[in-house]
Image 1 (tube, rainbow, N blue to C red):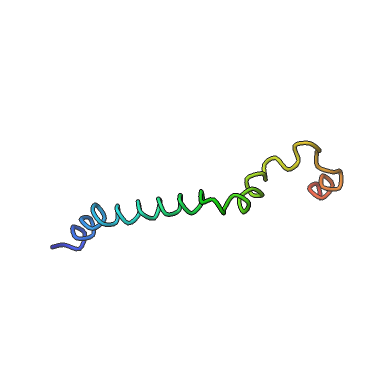
Image 2: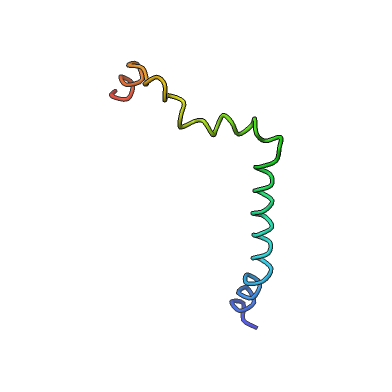
Length: 64
């Protein structure tokens, strides 16, 4: 059997199952009850300066 055929058969059968199990494991890890506090800060990154604009000092640093 050729190497390509062997690897193709492996990828079509077992590797698909392994990657699907890995994906389910990651989803369960992220949505576990203890992870809420850990992911609250990164989830709010886009909204950090919503109430107040960046200071002039930050704008001066970007221009330089």
